[in-house]
Length: 359
Ligand SMILES: Cc1cc2nc3c(=O)[nH]c(=O)nc-3n(C[C@H](O)[C@H](O)[C@H](O)COP(=O)(O)OP(=O)(O)OC[C@H]3O[C@@H](n4cnc5c(N)ncnc54)[C@H](O)[C@@H]3O)c2cc1C
Image (cartoon, rainbow, N blue to C red):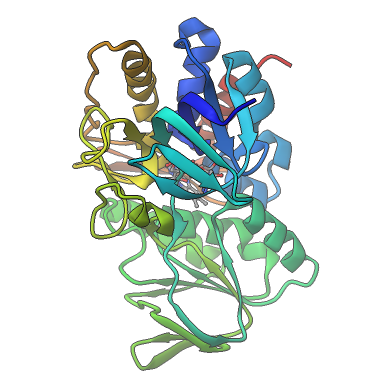
């Protein structure tokens, strides 16, 4: 097989999973289409805290891509993109191989922002990519030690609640307030759960560098130890800014409402790797972009007019509380409890089940 495609999907993110799901049900456009993914599975971040808390097995929290792609009529290319030349419409892989395509779609997610690392004695585990995070976590579990989690957003809070009972001491460091941007009542509920779980929370502490075994904020030493999880805000994959695509000041690909790159209309981008007005980076928004992306990739391949993505104004947040329950926030309202945990579990399992291809 040669390396020329009509359409290449790079990354098995939430939006591409939605595209493949629609194509499984018969809406696949004509042409040679490939999906590039470093591994055989797409992990579902919504279930990761439950996996760490021991509520799920790994195979319940991931989507096998081979069956999904085969059912959708897409070639699965198990490779990692290392470089993109957007003008030449060509991606270069870790082994130096190249693929080119008439149309490209990027749904590559993001990686946690890392502080500056000097001479570090710390074992640092970024929460993404999930494969390497889970491998690292399994290694740590063999000899639990005190732990710091950097990042007080939803991911950091859920991770802290999931693993608090599995380590001798846990500190959650947040540059802003914990769950900043969420309603105050949700913050208070989360802080109570964190306190009950014995998590030490430090807010307003922006860790900007690591020296030896210490996390440092400005000139203040804020934590000493051996193990740190990075669950900080999203940063872009570094090679995107070198691709020739118009990127914002943080390196995310600027797209318009059709999800096309502002500089290279033959490149689409969705989810965390894209920069789109009024669209926060979260799984919820990436999922919502899936149907519009599917419609537009089909339209692009057949020369039809494209449709526009309208971000929803409100999004449901359901955070796992580490005990099988969940905290909810919707349109300023908040709630918590075991029943919400069961509802979250049902939604999460349904998401996985919907993306299973034929066995
Ligand atoms: C612990 C945790 C819990 C979270 N819980 C929630 C939640 O409950 N609700 C919510 O809305 N958000 C949640 N989030 C945020 C959510 O995970 C992200 O916003 C969301 O995953 C972004 O989706 P995406 O489609 O952009 O990419 P992702 O779903 O992150 O997928 C990106 C894909 O690209 C692939 N990829 C990466 N680099 C390359 C490369 N170089 N070449 C090829 N492929 C590549 C990856 O393997 C991956 O399959 C959580 C995050 C974490 C860390």
